[in-house]
Length: 177
Ligand code: 5GP
Image 1: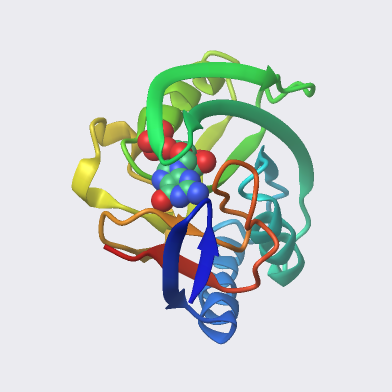
Image 2: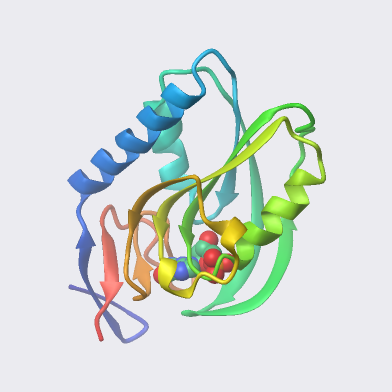
């Protein structure tokens, strides 16, 4: 068990399982994009560990860039999106794969799908390490690729934070009820 801000978290996904999940998603993407050179957009900060592991597990060529939105404070979403680091590359006519850490309400990916679609990529798909379908508010936020579905509990570790902490934990932990 680990404790942050007086909250207790219990083990949820081990290092080994994370590695297997990442390889499975990488294999799917490599097969689907064989012969193409997709452009991956890493959603900072949470997706950074998943992103770097995923990219290195691919068997195809690719290019990368970064974006940062923010919508969360503490363990609750504020529902409002701020574009803290905007996209700095031209994605027109490219095959785009957005890499997220977790999809919860879907507000973030719904926003991104509209925002990026307006930039006229050739194709646009989403890849998320985790997916919490229970609170999904937007059907278009359902990621085409995801590692694992999890129940509604708040999770930390492997990039996922609690007020900036716990990102460096190599496993994923879930808030103890
Ligand atoms: P959504 O817009 O789908 O509600 O939320 C997406 C963002 O909220 C994620 O990229 C992530 O930063 C944050 N988030 C959602 N659920 C969790 C969670 O269980 N733990 C942490 N640490 N962040 C979460």
